[in-house]
Length: 278
Length: 278
Image (cartoon, rainbow over all chains, first blue to last red; front, side, top):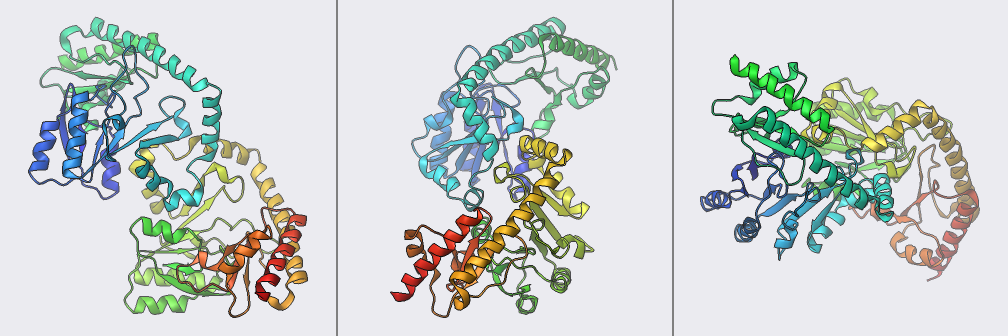
């Protein structure tokens, strides 16, 4: 089970592993637990639910506290595990997001993972698992872990030094500050160029704006003219095999400076104006 | 299908992945292809054969050229793939081992892998796959590869510099020379202390001596007194779930200096003398 929309590679990753993938609709508070419950009551027996509870990819939204508790109840009742992809948890702006998902779990339903990719450097390919001790033990006792003695010693050794020197805390603070500034800049530019033409919830952390265009809009089609104008994005249907998101696009503000973001939104609007005329 | 004996974690790794593991006996030229053929003719339908063709772990032996060809024929006839673990291929002494397994394959049966763990530094956790282009494509097109853009960017970038600067070639030459010297030292010490009490084939590359003790010997039992004497090894039955190797022990000569190796063999013989008296 995954959110609709969700991280754009996860459905293919699961299918590559022989899993069947089913989407559950979301709203501004994240996964619609009532919709999931209906599927379960109809006899669906998932082994895992994959979810991005904080600053979701692509929507930027957080799963509410209430729904976190409800999902754990369903996991207990219907016997499935929750894979919580919490890689954006630490990238919050002024307000803290809900606590990490494991805080809502009194058993061993939640297997949460974080990554230094999002808070230090993507190339390090190193992260962590946050779960009950008996769950952690399954990973640390696995033959693959034993064989290599670990998954990435060299990066892990580097990261340990960065943490011990206090540099990770400093770096995460810098990211929060800088991403907050960039997010504001993107918001201002979107207001300036698009105004009421689009709808979105302003992100309070994470990497993304998830824009909804008017009825009839085709985000795949705009991409061609956008790229001609020298700007790009991921169209909504990249994030779901359901095909429900042709009115949406995802923008990332983390990779560019404020002036570049302004220029990007200006070019996007230019492409959109041409698209609207066509 | 695996060799009996084989790399001591691989059986558990395969079982962790839900695979059933069956051993095939070996002799001084590696896997007994005739025994494998009998199993196949009896109706066994393996999906993969895992084999360490050069300087095998734990025996140190190489699979002969003839048997390499025969294995490919069987793989074609009975439709299975060969996972060739060739991590020791480059660690040869005076004579070259047979060519890499893929050289014997005119189709796409062989999936060979190498590792910088054995020729540069284990902590890098980076290796390569050597296979037909259509096989490589399956790995490079996998969702997991796409998601991360690669498996270990940081180590890969370091290794690339090491290769471009010509330092890997130099380092491998140093390892060959040094491991050859250490292997000789272990051989001399084994002759000095054990003489005819044990049997083994002198390795011509790789990391290991595989010693056979007299009838009735129990390599698990010797381990306790060996460790009391300050020396250790992996007992034969660590390398096979078949339980056939209680007369064998594996010694590694790569991790120690010549003087330490001599001292280690001396201590091992001391423990063996006590063991024999008990």
